[in-house]
Length: 594
Image: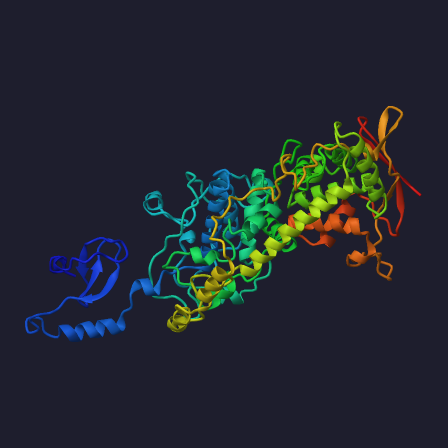
């Protein structure tokens, strides 16, 4: 390579716009700034002075390939690490503290690499070919600082409580870094990663294989450790709204990380994250990592049922006074106690709490306590409230269940329609196509040309949407916004519950004296196992309540119904009723079976 002879070439680089060229051995120009190699070659005027130049250039060109086309050497775990880094960056942009990325999530991931014997252990699984950068645990301090590694040792969390192995080193904490690896030509023929085929076939007992859904489990465990104001349902909704990388997370890989073949089955996702599936992944990850007891959920914590109930009451436009009822339910059932809310993966009888689903279940119980939801009593109480509001327009209005139902049904139908349209328009195929082998790459890119599938889908969406593209709104914990000024969508937050209460001595009790537990059918066998939830067994108003909250959390109605049964801590093997006495400010609930 001769920099002096390349000075005559004055065009700007197409990659970095710099004018600084050198010559390769084949006589082609390359940018000294970004190492981009052009197709232009230097013209040789006197071929006699340079014998066999053309022949040498042809021979070398056939034997060698550009490093950029071949890509970096990388392992599957490095791909997942890059996804975790992007997700942590997205969470930080949503307002989560930097400690989640730089300390908690970093240490959880490092713990996984150690437990799965991919790094930070004496005998890592990668013994052939290149060791991943995360395996270089014996680097000197100068080497550690000279180049950003995939992982740096951190000691922000104490795993001594769990009886786990101690960490090999303790160095100065560093931020969660971006992947940076070396170039090579030893990538697998059947995958872009070195171990794509091996990873797909690996079935080692007792070792958890990493997957893209499990990256969300790592994120949620980190959020739970930090007690951040993001529930699991919020996390999955942010993923669905593309605020957090998930479906096309591999699109954010560096250009040099070639991904094809078996990598497609590992990193490509073709379905939205499901609450129940991700929750099971969370338990699986926490158990495999032997995580110690998580920080306690106290009354001042966002995940406490009293605070979450307040949030969801505002979300669904219910009266503020209902928060008194939900607090009574929480106190009576004991689900607000620290011991009940604590998450301890290594405990012998570990409890797993779905904090958001539990809070919504408490609200459903409170609504049943007040209105029974049997398609009869709630409408009778609505007639009483309507007559009172017409006669006393200057006073504080009584809560009208029928009017609230009409407002919420219209709002939820509109929200569902927009949600379904957004899902229908979603482009499952990313901008960077996936192919099964490097040989198929030119064919795949040719098919995705100007008239490719993605191009046609974008053009069709442009024709359907007459309105111009609106910038993506910033995410919010609330999906509905209720204000007093909106006449078409009245706000019920300030309404009173006097219409459903009656004075009894020095306390207030509900006019409703009944509470039905369940009309679910049971198996004919002696196990008394509850069968699948069937809407036809329940009243229409109860179905509406379940469908409303199920849509907010993006969960199944049967999932919420079962959580509601667990919430009140009564498992009754037949349809029955309870007599209820609700009293405050004494704050107690007593149940009497018929």
